[in-house]
Length: 285
Length: 288
Image (cartoon, rainbow over all chains, first blue to last red; front, side, top):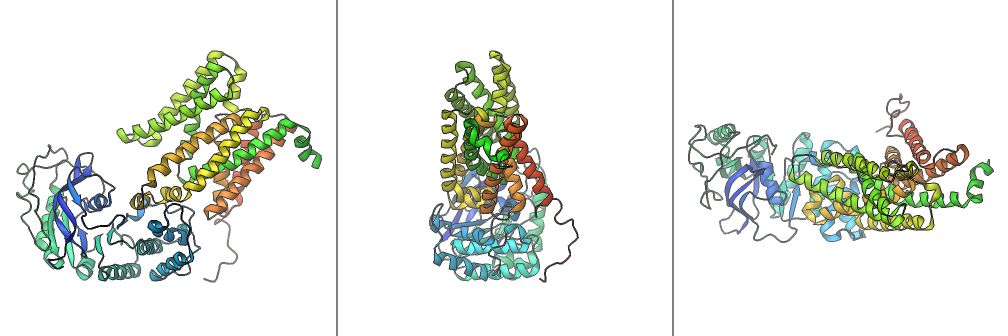
């Protein structure tokens, strides 16, 4: 990442959550255009919540998300696989073709050139020959391939992937990683929630470590250190179910790209009472 | 044989009217039922059909068995309950099915009470079970108009509605169609329930929506085939139900819905998606 690249995403003291309970807490910082970022952290750290917030699925409880350089409709968001109705009677071709929505809208017809691009996208994810199959007959890995084909057609400069590798065979994961690296090479900005730290080390140049609060953001090798991971775990365990209201207002640029700020958190959350906590609950993030 | 099957329709105008009404219902209400089923809202459709009752009953109380008053009352009551359930779901911690269940139980109780205020059991039966054998011109026109509007609306809404059913997050991501698809569809459900209510009554109207859709789902892997099959099953059941009613002198509405039920159980037994498929030993599996 070059310092001169303009930021694509700017978080300004962002707090996201459900029913006033924050899942992402006072996040500030910038993500430059063209970054390939692995969003990591313990369960319930707010990784999926952050992506939902970026995708506009969730309104911030506080602070702002700014996407100054992003054109309208330039964001593609892949929700977790569990959020779609697998059994709907739809063919693989039709499902993937919906990735052309920005061009065909609600009423436009699929022209020959569109059909060719759909077939190309299917070939790119290794699903040639599956055009007429019902999506319900696909395996988990094949369904994820089809969803990636749809992403190819969406052709978005900013791509958000929520646990794209969860419960998927390793060969499919390898193929999907190759697609993601290809998008990265094309200059797209990609945020991916990943659980496997080994994958993060191997493929992702940048990592954002969340534990409700931002713990670290920067080059992967500097983020995935035992000390920072342990801090993230401690933070996630220390949150209080019946926390009082939070009145903390962090300054705007707590974290910066390429800068590790392990002291984002002013007090060690393992000691109760020394820090203001939001309450949290059992939502999955 | 032909005498038994055809002559009731050629000889009696009321049978022809019933047939036309059922054809219109099959073309309008059944495709709506297909999407109710695919949106996993089958029971919600049932709940909404009850919600229509107090509105229709109020119309009846004020104007007697008047088509216009009962139609407008039913549509208004249905829309109010849909909106109220939506608001309650968003503002409280009740899920949509729970809030709808609360509304429809109250609606049904209120509706039956209001109808019985005028105190004629025959009218109560008419409201609850419809009068497909006594459709007048105005009712027939109303049913046909709603069916026509429904087919046009579904054709326009098809793509957003399909996405809203199977991947709503994607639809919200690429467009602002999501609320249009959701509420537009619910409005279609209300209108078709009112249309079905005139022919089959509030309690039976959902039958011709959901049962053919469920049967068709068992046979088809794609949406176009499912829609086509559902319409055909609904229409065939209507014809069979009308004939059964004519020859055995049973009420027509329940007979039609029972015939839909026969189609459903047959599909359940015989269709590729049914109970027997997959449990029978396979003699030859495919090569790859």
